[in-house]
Length: 367
Image (cartoon, rainbow, N blue to C red):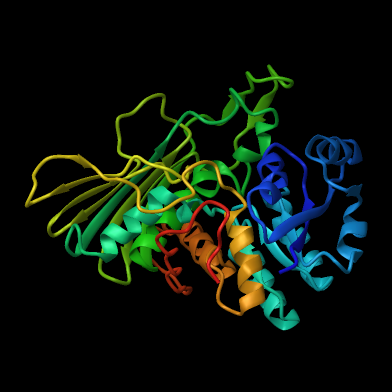
């Protein structure tokens, strides 16, 4: 089967792992990369052996490119995605899908009208760690899921990221930056969310960059940096999520799922591997669980490869636009709930993505 040709738009920090994806998946290849900074595009093309570095206009006009991988900053995710769709391309974007519901709906509606697909990171939920957790839940290892707890607590990105400003603007913050990993993992394991409520605040209105090359520059914070919320899943599970850039240290679990027969300790949803631990009424001690699935190292690009395979076979792809929009809807609802002091009923839903089959080796994608 011929490889699906990808065009990458956005050659910043995250692009490297996507530019390497062709080495790991036989069904895709990167035909070209583009960036508003042509020097950056040329540099990445040379570093990763990509045939062409070109302008955004050139990459969208290339008839052989079927999927645009959109790695731009969040505030232009929708603009680039809509341009790709208008050019007749399917699009797979970095998270979040967009910075608000209106833009997210525009992307999905435009793709439906054009007959192309939308996919979105994160694809870490397809990794061996989270797929093992999914299988344990589906197999009834902890009984019926009752509740879930998720925490992403740090002190922000200005100490290490070369361009941290956008993390403190609308569309950024800990919820929109890291929330997609946690919410996507939870939805993939427990199904869609019905309603949410939450509280949010800005603790440090001004941040000082200590990373290079912008050491000493100040950031005016324009989005909440500590958000605590409650979510009700359609299945009846009650979950909590706290995301923060205001915490120096913590011992909070990343994700735990609590069931009628036990507890499941879920690995970092920003990674593809383990560890996975389980405690059950029948065996009341923490046990390490051997991972049942592959893709345990950094496999970003797996979602793109799965989408490319699905485009050939006609099945739904797993890291879908509908899933990403549902996560976006939930994140926006947390902020709305804080402003309006009430529960927010979500208007979106999605299918729980089909689990990956057991036994796939790295590089394999099921038909």
